Image 1 (cartoon, rainbow, N blue to C red):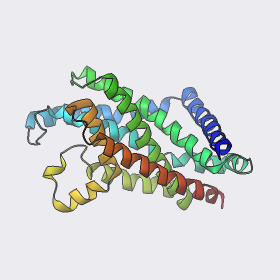
Image 2: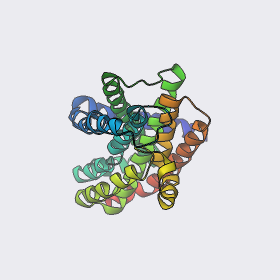
Image 3: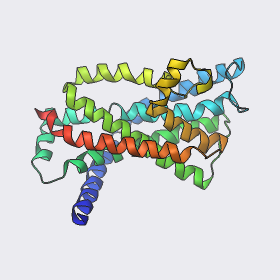
Length: 258
């Protein structure tokens, strides 16, 4: 059992390193995806700060909004991660992976960790933009470590979910269509832009079962409010959700080539 666990960890690291190497050779995706959060903070955030119509618990709207935009940018990168396994299948790479003794869990975990690393690079960009806009955020050692953990878990979960979707739809066109359909509803049905307290009842229910809400809540607690009471619960929910999608993704992974 111990030997199998070590093998999965080693293989996962190898897969993650391979995925990160792709990013190092072609960082264009991260640069282009950084444009959207910059626009959200610099334009939408600045405009809404002047209206002051949304209760933010005594913080500026940009402070309140920054964790939500950080979470959004991380999720938007991870949710399209399933495209990579469709591309690998079309290029014949996936078939080669599947005939090796590499555990399916390692293939999935490697991509989830890689998504987390990409998410961290995106988070750094958002935090730099927030700094330029003079948004005050709590940057304690504990807070930074917590942000790293939450971003890794959140990106890993949505990357795993993305691979499940890719295993079902099997084509790039269908995958892109579904990805576009679910990303914005996930965003607007969370607490990223406004507190849960002002949502209608049905939207509050959706927010409770929306994983993005737990990412935003944890990041907001760590970076803005400093109230860490619910952070352990948020992290536990993300860990449990990540474990579930890892198991399902590992089961569904070979079905991409069918």
